[in-house]
Length: 365
Image (cartoon, rainbow, N blue to C red; front, side, top):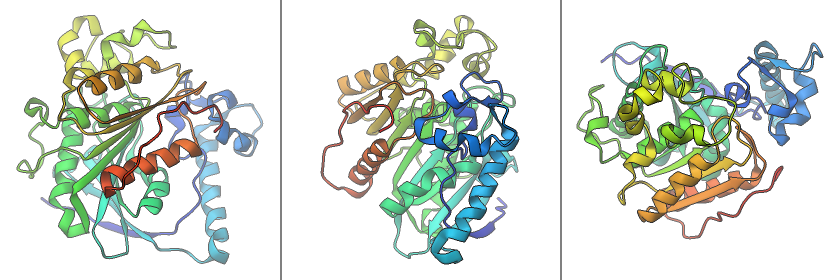
């Protein structure tokens, strides 16, 4: 297998409020961001990003805002000195077939000691998104916990339907474990975090470590297992067959819905594969500990999706933290939630004692 390494020393820059969340926040999927679609913490920068003052943020305005924020961040950091706490290794081919959708990026601290690894999996309805915003998403947790990080691509539904997406994710985890010694992180301490469709995929990783039928046969490291240490799932679908039981802006059971495109047709015609693609189907006592966070006003993936999964995990005896984000939509920011995630990762990656609160987080906290 030929692996192309593109090494770049990154400066540590402030997080853009829009970062790689455009598709997650674009609730009505019109390719524009309304102010009301943004989490409370991001709205303060709406006017700065809406440069043509038309009342919405286009993808081009989003990209320009992010670029400006990077430049401003470099000039502010320690009087303009670029920091080099992490190096980024981009576009590592975890299958070996040259498909850019089967590649990952690594973010490695320069300190020599082996670190636990936190892997980000992007959202986008299984039909959009990429690994490219992973570093910005991961950075607060990498810095606070002293972890290494990774962000992965997987094949989208325009290229392949289920189970290609979970086969890719599992191949990436096996590749990461096989190369742990080479890159200096710990193969036995791998956490996964995802949002929306990425939340669905990390939940699947957490509940199918003992399901050989979903391993696939991709890559050169089939002797490795794809089990993960713990899971952080933000507003991911958990039961594809019940998503229409609660009001949202999407008819999830339709053939042209994100879920329909994932399984290859209307869900009523694809019940068996829809069940296989649902995390609730695979819950067992051997599953990885999981933290779920979900907004009560989510108009794309109903809050009940995480409530159902959390209930089943608890019955099975799986350590579970389910956090309700009061009045939050599909995509949210919260300092309180970030701290709980840090505590959760510290408990399961670092062995630190302590309970993580499941108390509802109020809007704007």
